[in-house]
Length: 173
Image 1 (spheres, rainbow, N blue to C red):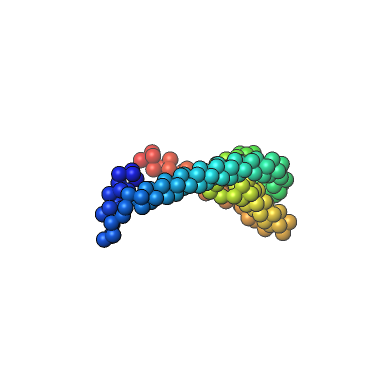
Image 2 (cartoon, helix red, strand yellow):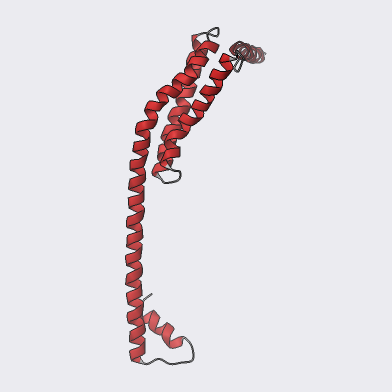
């Protein structure tokens, strides 16, 4: 708002007419408030930038501890999958390993980005993949101890080969 706009507003507002001295007081007050508002906005920007910086540091701290814990989590999931997939062969075991690794990696990278943008907390960003895979690993260990079949790889292989055979039959027509 320019001073001339403020002057027009003051002259046109209400029925009372203001003296030049009163108008100057109002303009000075307006300028002081405008300066104070700019100062407050500058401080808010400084605080927001500091929060982003602190969040980035907290992401690195949580990542420093969550990646080593991932080794334990991958053992929790790898041991029962290795036992269950023994009869299925190296291909199924390798494929499952790649799937779990890609899930962990994408969760870690995506979580880091979300935490750096302050969308989610750094703790959740860095530990969510460990928690999810860890719970799945504990569940797989319990099911393998009880000798229940959680993932029947032979059925999965037969299902895949049936679909391939159907697709080949359709393509040959």
